Length: 197
Image: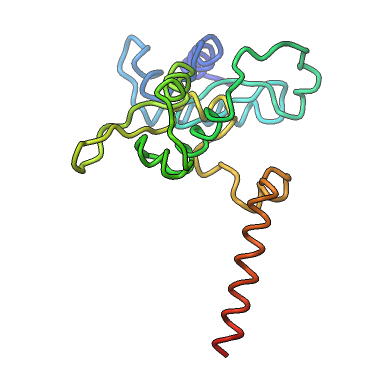
């Protein structure tokens, strides 16, 4: 039997426009409820919905309902995606995701070209990156990090779920120039090892 608090938490998660964490849910009750109790209810709801037509998922410590990935083909409609990123914005987003927290100068050093403020602005407007403070070096440059909205949009629980180099290679997403460079460097290492022997 589902208790009233669990039902209320389930209703709040279902009706919310954005993912909620346990503290936010606990604060919505009139009486004080321990956060641990809310977390236990969330887990019970997640277990109850596992394998059903909707599932409760956690993204960056926040919970929301979504349809399971294996049913996406039934729910997909042809539509224009209003958020098309430029190549520069995609590169900057990837650099921030894999190297965060990172400054604009560090982004430019990795990309090898100057990054316009507009590119960073587009990513901040999309709420995929956000300022993360200032680096404690001369000039105190602003540093950037990804947000929970980034995790939610890309279906990640945390940054640990980002694909690694082997995943990207297997998906054919690495630039052929990068692959050729890696192979050349590997061959160069083999030659050096042979010379040393």
